[in-house]
Length: 309
Ligand code: UT7
Image 1 (spheres, rainbow, N blue to C red):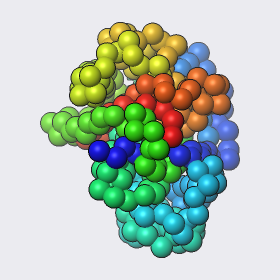
Image 2: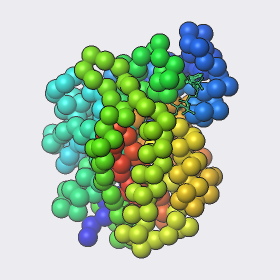
Image 3: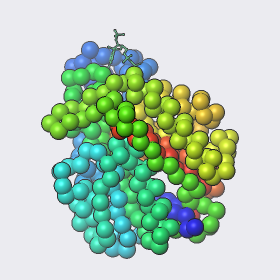
Image 4: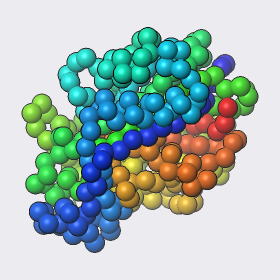
């Protein structure tokens, strides 16, 4: 089977930095509480899904040396589109000058990994170049007077160009897409309302589903947790990541994080963390890289890759 691999990666974040100290000026909270309970120090706010998504996509295309006109498909993972319709993906397509099919996918914070899974299947079916964009502007759906949610979220985008791996050992090895609809009320944003959640229960279920999905893709690829060089988890809360890593039996320093400076950016969080890991030199060719996301739904997705072209 042809495996898809990441040929280019680009990211974008909101232009305005909002620190914990900024939030503590208007909310009954503190930098100390937020850092201890979440690991977040600041978040970036601003921009539309189109602006952030197109910016990240251009950088990914440039790195992959792919012309937008040569793309076969654009999948945009988002749960905060700029409009009910058209899809963000259609606007991004126009902005880039692409001529291919384009659609949005909403799997909340698991969206990017769901989209990577679909890109893999389309490349296995014969497509050559698929653009995956994860973008969310959660600040527009955040109640800035609610200290239980306002501390968590930020705006951002990450994009990858996926192409067929030249080396057949590299690329996507296994994927998993899951949903536990019985937990759909734990994390909700109704039309005209703000994000509402049962944080404690989301926390508990998140650790469970992340570990189960990770084990599943490892088993499907015939690998062990000890084979994983880098885990790129959804960036919701550092304590969730630490608990999941512990249960999975992977050393904490193998988890890529970026939430310290971005907050939770939903569909964008995994590519943003991927970029941060890469900039630190933490990912090398042939590394086994595990992407694992969870989110409202409750959705969960994992993808295991052997890094490199
Ligand atoms: O993409 C998925 C998105 N959502 C999530 O991932 C949410 C997952 N859950 C979490 O990240 C955590 O549950 C939170 C960070 C939201 C909350 O942390 P926690 O350790 O579960 O705190 P808690 O809800 O148990 O609250 C502990 C206390 C409460 O006070 P009392 O009842 O003990 O007096 C809260 O009212 O902390 C209080 N509190 C705060 N205090 C200062 C809640 N929010 C804040 C705050 N600053 N911002």
